[in-house]
Structures are given as C-alpha cells and as structure tokens.
Image (cartoon, rainbow, N blue to C red):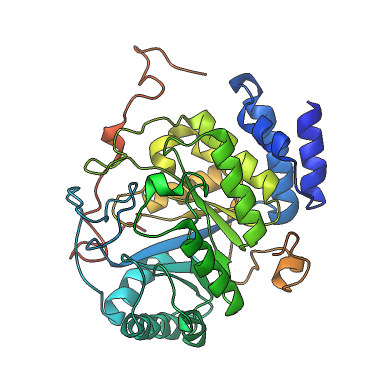
Length: 378
C-alpha cells in the first residue's frame, strides 16, 4: 500500500504526515489492519526497539473534584460510587508507589483530582516526591495535579519531579462539549509551563467520546506542535454515573488504527497505552505493543486494570522486553533537548459481544491500593 510505505518513510525521517494521510490511516479497512500495524511497527521499532516502558499510577486524592469533565468519574456531582479520599501522606504514597516499582515500573505518576494545586498542595506533593526518590534510586516521577499557576512547575522541578502530565484530551473545536469549567487554552498553557520549567512534558488524548476522525487528527497534530516527550492515548472508560456512560463506540480495530495514527504523527515520542486498553483492546492488546512503547502497569485512578503479572507475561509472550531503569526511553536527539521538530473482523452474537455493545462487565471500580487497606495491583 503506497500510503503505508510513504508513512513509514516519513516516520523514519521524523517528517510530519499530511492531515489527509493521517485521516486515511483511520479510514483503513479491517482487511488492511495488520498491514497498518506492521507499518507503524517499523517506525516504533526504529526509535524504541522492542522495549516497553512501565508506568505506575498513584492516586494521591480521589474524587471531590469541582470540575465537570464529562468523561471523569471524579467530576463534580459524580454518582459513580468510586473511592473518595483526601491527600495521602508522603509515606502512604511512597508505599503505594513501591508496589508498582517492584513490579517493574520505572516511572511513578502522582495524580490528584481537582482544578489545580494550591501552593500548599505543591509543598505536599514535593514532600511525596522526595520520599519516593529517597527510597527508590533512579525512579522517574511525573506529577499530574491539574492546571498550574505561575511558579508551581518550577517548584515541582526543584523538588525532584522529572515530568508533568496534563492531557489535551480532545480537539479545541469540541472541548467545550466535554468540559465547561476550564478551557482548552488553559490546558495548553499548563503544558507550556511544564516545558518552560524544564520538566518533561507529558500530554495526550482520550478517544471514544463521540469525536470524529477530524477531531482525533486535530488533537494529535496539536500535541505534535506542543512537542511533549510522551503522549498517553486513553480510551474512554464509560463508567456508570458519568455523562458519557453510554459512549461505547470503540472496537479493538478502531483502537489499533488510532494508535497507529498517533505513532505516524509522533514517530519518536513515547506513545503510551493508558486507561481503557483492557476494556476496548481486550485480547488484541499484544498487537498494540507494536505501536506503543509504554503502558501503565496495574490499576488506574478509579478503575481496575489487568493484573500486573498478566501484563508482564503479555509483554514477554509478544516478543518485547520491559525497559530497565538503566535504559533511556527517548531517542538521543530528544534527550539532548535539541532537534524537537515542530516547535516544539466481527464475531457473531453466538460467539461473543457485538461491536459497539456496552461491555459494562469489563469496568470495575477500584477497591484496592491507594486509599484502602488492601494490597494494590502491581
């Protein structure tokens, strides 16, 4: 297929595809899916080999959020029945992180619900970062605390944070349909603040919220312009009690096409399969490893993930290896801070669930790990 040959050549040169080419990837048929995966896999292996980076989430503060993000189970007025608790103490957060690190994770992502941190919150998180780093040599720590005010990114960097995550989530044109309590521009500003403070920027998207192919391409092109080092690709988990609980539009094939498109547009960036992979990729998760070079290990913020040991077995069975703490994730040209281009087949009803059928059986509210007395999944 000429399209795929062209995209591979561009990916190896770090050249941006045209919008028409990116849209064409999303429009490919299921008959061509393996060809698409193979082509994007060449780009992935060129820049990242067969390494898979493991990341581990620690939810520092769950629920109680004043924002109205339609996709989120922690949103204002949520009736989802999720765990709700205020800030974990530094030793509690460090203990939670230790489980993921023991399972092979090299990055800990510290997440807190809310619009954004107060200065006191930043101090609290700074203490947590120091506690984790003192007990785990070589660990990477990424903070995800919402919208940042002036000076806060610098303070997190001084405390030892390596990265800051703040997702764009969807296109600028549709952002107001998803969230009304802050703007798309607010999110862009926070990613830019992280960049300016010397933090490794992490910013991604959520697919499956009813967006069009054009919306998906728009947000991925916007991400390329922002030039984050890592792009998490979340697939909407339609949790009962949220406004998007009925949005079951994704299929495993659709998810793979989205990941392939992201890889072609962002060839040398850490592409991470984030929330929802177990729900929507299901048994096709191993194929996604040919597209993304990073995943979350264990549970997510408010929902359960695949067993950590199952993740490790999946990686090995698919012919990949877990990236070690002594290995550098990004290609050399990105680590150096220079050369960042751009400025930065369906089963029958008898065989299984129909495409687009709601799979609420796959969504389990997290009841273990941080904020509970039960051991975490790692």
